[in-house]
Image (cartoon, rainbow, N blue to C red; front, side):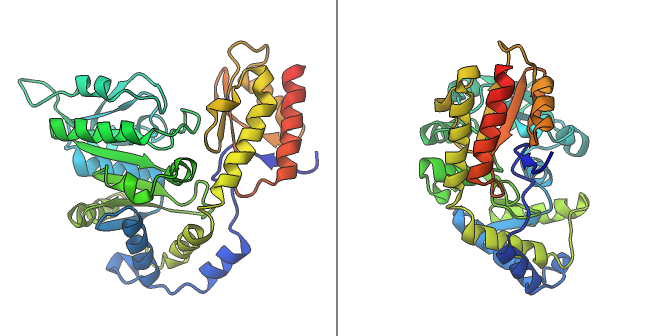
Length: 342
């Protein structure tokens, strides 16, 4: 079969030579004791980028999200999010299992959410009602095709949260992509949220790690919750160094991934994908009206050396990333066009 082109997700990247060198020479200490200087530096850097007081390094985006939700929602109370949100779709029920959190969702609309619809769902404290304590949004939106929630929408969501006295959390696993696509400063996003989770291993190319961002008080509590969930790590500066390298070298280049994704979208547009919908590095494939279903397309692509994700019977996904070259994008476009024309 020869070369394999992996467009399943942007978490499959390998550390670059420069990143490996940074990891190899990282100064380390015991982070459970708060003595790893590279972790401390990463946390301070990310907190400053988003205009918050503090941040906490966690081994995964799921853990970072779930810690943040527990900061806002006591057991038995309610989180509002959309029906396709990562926190209730891809985190295996952790909000309920670990936090005792009750979740209620608005219909899946990706990045095209309506803050007034969300406002109408908020339940106050009352007789036998489950009170809403927090709202979570996702930027960019994974199952929403990498869609970017517009800044005015997020500002209105902040107003809604303030009007009802609830917290606002951002699952910002790919917020770097939104920052590059729309030119919104990271601090411009940060000021709108009580907490954010931001990922270093999606798009930025680090092998491991996410951070929870918030107030000093929230992050002190988050440190306790991280330990409770098994996320306290020792000489983890070798991983934090990869994250620091990624922030220094890999944010601006996300624009290249967006261009590659747009090229793929144009190649499959005759088969049902509109190139104008693709804003960042995710290309959704809606096969509802196509003879091939998602599994058949994935099998045909795999036979030619192209790996894609299957999200549902008629939904597939392509994701561009650091390890995909222009020549591989051209090859992937040819493989998909051939398969979709068969």
